[in-house]
Length: 310
Ligand SMILES: Nc1ncnc2c1ncn2[C@@H]1O[C@H](COP(=O)(O)OP(=O)(O)OP(=O)(O)O)[C@@H](O)[C@H]1O
Image (cartoon, rainbow, N blue to C red; front, side):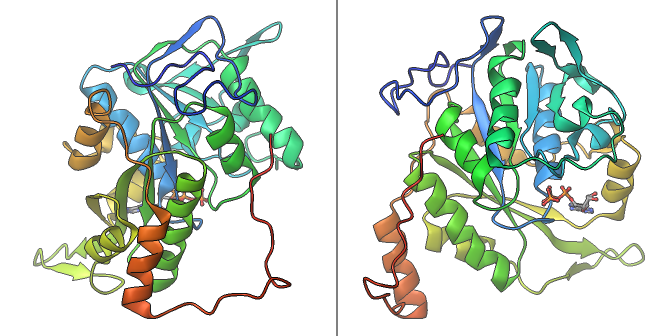
């Protein structure tokens, strides 16, 4: 797979100086971010599932766990308690099932339940280490499991890594839908393309009669993706077997076949079909048509939201 250039000089930013340089021993062809506006919606599950599905198709896959303060990727892939290998300043990712390479803050801690009590600049430094000081080797797709929300680390990833496209994970609740808009706008403001929305935990299947139950009410996937102007990708069930597999570190083996089919196809198409950067003005117009005009703040009430340099 070939996406954008990964040598710190992508066409997108014209070689902006804040880009972190890829380690000379890494050859990452494609970087896909997985984000959610809000915590706990299943972003790490989607990151790991995407990695597993791509690895099942024979791709060389890595996961950069940018959820520094709440990392769950190592545990889900059976790498809980594993430490990263270091040679001097160089980090080597742990290798999990299906050859998936993983780099996570948890692999740098003495105990996996130690808290990471780092402030913004140190968190950004960790992202730099996971990209510039880590030898990933040849990787077709590097999945970046982002922290929830639109904070410091997400900003760093978008500014400093050559993200080719981002998958936004949501659940069918109004609060989460509203926050999807923030995640889409953040990507747009950073010039990052959006691959589409994945709705997680939308429904469950009754183990007795097989009936589908919409756990949080009807799906919002079509509505939210239309309003945001991004693709509707997959709708995932709430499945106790998946939760148990995550807890047991056995997700790679237990993940049902052809999980996330549309998301996988979209990622595989990235080389020929770049992820479109959402049009924020058009998106605002659609939200306004659907929900009415949002009262505009006065000049005194307006806060400068321009992202700062890393
Ligand atoms: N579709 C699902 N079916 C069953 N359990 C799920 C599903 N999706 C996520 N879970 C469970 O919910 C918990 C939270 O999932 P996950 O860690 O992926 O969320 P997250 O959005 O990455 O959270 P955080 O915001 O803390 O990073 C996990 O224990 C996971 O096993």
